[in-house]
Amino acid sequence: MTPRPGLAATICHVLREDANLAEAIPVADRDRAVEECIAAAVRIPQGHWNAYQADIMPGGIGLLVLHGLLIRTVGVSGGSSAELLGEGDLLRPWQGEHATPPLPHTASWRVLKPVRLAVLDREVARRFSRYPELTGRLVARELARSRNLAINMAIVQQPRVHIRVHMLLWHLANRWGYAVPEGILLPLRLTHDLLADLVAARRPTVSTALAHLGKSGLVRPGSDGWLLAGRPPGELLELQDRLPGRGERLVPPARRQENRVSG
Image (cartoon, rainbow, N blue to C red; front, side, top):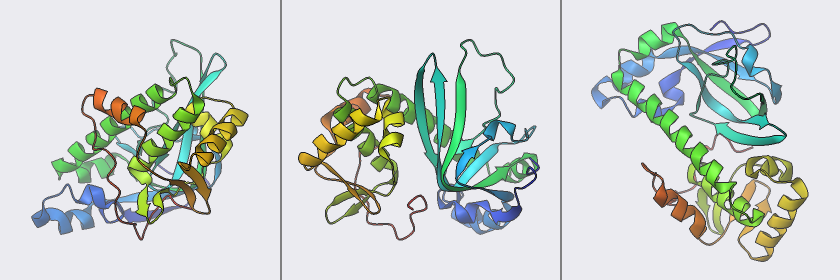
């Protein structure tokens, strides 16, 4: 992909910036892979992103999120759903753009925190092909994204909005949260409007739900995001148990010194 006008590109060492990908490479080959697996990197500023106008990269892999946070919203017949994406996610926003959808819908992308993307084009795919383990790791991430979407869909089916919000915050904490003395900190500044999009509810209803969770001592806002107390809601654990190939339940990690999605 040739970066579009106005998007200044730099060169990045993908495996140096994405340690999880680097860990897929056997130790004996890792240093060489880190030096060889380079790609162009572009920055997308905060705000609406015309992702579907990105140049298509024939034979390429896609766009890898190195830093930042963005949301994809899809609307159908007056309803909508939203997906939160961040570090480590692989995007192909142009895919299917010209196909005729079976159901009319709208789709939009918005950058919540400035994003840095590695452009995994055809040349990068050739470099990656020298290390087959990278293919497995990228496929695993796409499967994890699919599973997360399935959980999100199940969460919005909960009839009580305060349960939806509680489940969603813990679900996001499984990926981005970390332990602090008061509980689990989700270092994402998610507004009431944004949470409403993610749980398919109205903003006033979400505000009421957060007030209920706050009075119960389960959730409270902080300068760095949302603080979760107690244990994950039982409804979320039951949902994870029912899904095939489920990931591990939340085990609070130590506080990370470098949290790339916190603002």
